Image (cartoon, rainbow, N blue to C red):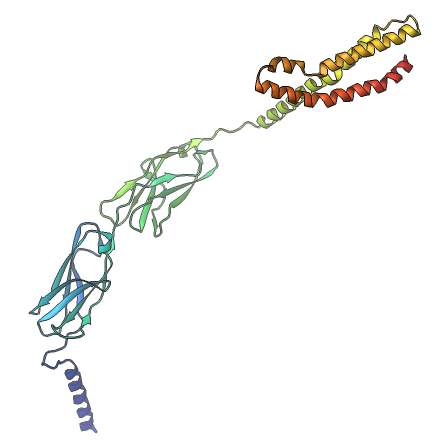
Length: 337
């Protein structure tokens, strides 16, 4: 049994050695290793990076090919055991992404692929904008400040200041959104100049925002709503009085005036005088309720003509109503007399 086990182990080793050997006696290439030997995976524009690709064990010569997203970028034939070096210049956003290399013998099918390296383009951040929903505040009020940089590679770190002193821990945003802090206005010292700064992985790229100031909000007097209400009531009273004078007070005054000056020399003369009084009263009321002032002021203009029409349309029904009311009251007045 021990001898049989040794035979089986020897057969297994021979099979693996045969699989690693080609028909012409060369050892098959293994999966190469892709290594970054110059630069970083986070790159900026115009930056150079160097990649190394090597398959070991393997028998030279070996052909190494560099790919980016399955598209060939460059190739190199090595006749010794040294790795193939590929130098890249990041000149646009299309130069970043995933890279792999392939090792194979010349005039042979197949080959082995390496691990992948992924490059990320770093963009400088733009000047952040510091803002708040309100620019006025008063003591005891909660306010918010937001800082946002529209451009730049993520993540972006924000820090808030009042004067030269930071007022909050730094906030690192993994998404394209503003950093927000909450402030409590406790005293007049909280009214001042605020700023924020932003930075990311781009080297030497810290940007400061605009200045933002909270101003003291004017506190409204408790009597202001009452004053406004009283002013509106007074205005309505003036308007009501102005409407009552021509429509009720003047006709009533004229009626009493003519009544007090009525002659008492007989029934016939009395009736004639009353009829004359009525005609005068109706004539005065008709003159007052007609809009002659509007006609006089607005004559000769298109706007005045329109005002005349509107005034006549408003006063004519009222004039007719008062006229008929006084006619109906005439017998009762005569009986009282």
